[in-house]
Image 1 (tube, rainbow, N blue to C red):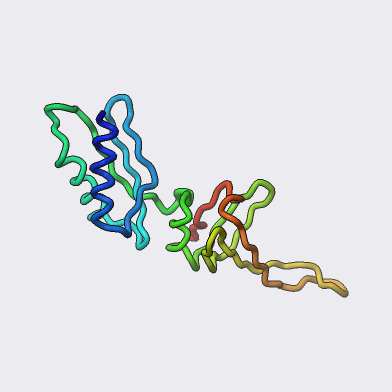
Image 2 (spheres, rainbow, N blue to C red):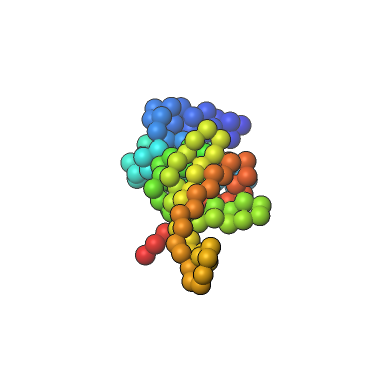
Length: 153
């Protein structure tokens, strides 16, 4: 009962800002509610507070004892939904498929797939030494096992 009530409050809170979307939602056996959101333009503390209030202010603590955590998907969190790729265009991603791991700049998000580009050193076609070549790979969403932003410090 608590889960369905919280889910409807959460959905209502997310409808108020269509740039925000749900990544994960769990209600534990001890009534610990955990919500993870992301946004097309990122997520601010104010966004988390807004979603938290949409839930918390509409639940009666006299009826249900609960703990609530609303968080944003962190920078090191895996990319789960196709919608999350758009805000990462221009960033370096590591994308794992069943057979290969690619690391390159996300240059496009298109219907059903992403496009990565990177430079690689390959042997010269003729003679000794190596040459730098531009690589490009389209990867279907259905082929992606795991994807994350590569953070540089």
